[in-house]
Length: 194
Image (cartoon, rainbow, N blue to C red; front, side, top):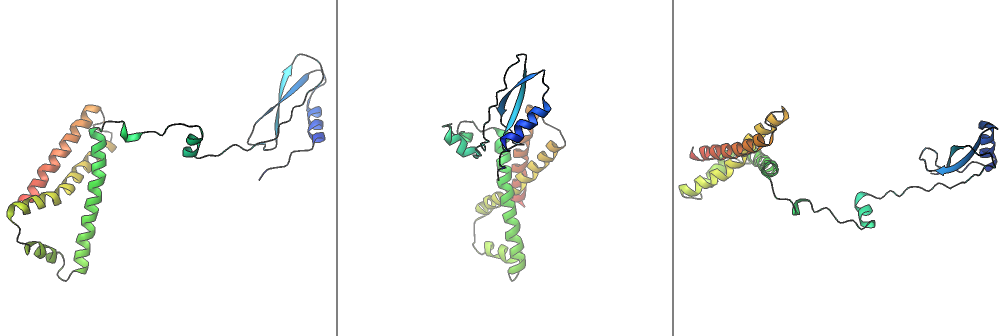
């Protein structure tokens, strides 16, 4: 909603009231969001002469969002991941989020099995045993089931250490990423051997 401009006579009388007779002023319009009708800026000049008033009606600024502004100005889109080589810290962060989603899925499946199946979790185990899979395939299946949990666990410890301000230099970040990957793999194999 816009305010209507003040009457020309009101503005001129306010200006005359505030100005001294010995100093002449020239007025130039400037844009302001505080006065949506118009704002006049006084600039002191040493010349004595007539006063010039220039009035410019208020024009609301264009409020484009980021994408529409870039399209209007013909700016190229940022390529994001398409031009950058994947780094180990970025990949460990992304894989930690993915394994977190997988672990959440495990939780939902196991809790649903405990609530809604007749024998609880035991019915899931007996169903897998009834498939009569060989021991090597069971070992690989256990690794795939245990790896997201183990990796997410060690990356979570790494993230907690980052929040405490430890291991923040570049060499330590890469070293801790390698350690989390190796520790997750070793723990997954230990889960599969049991």
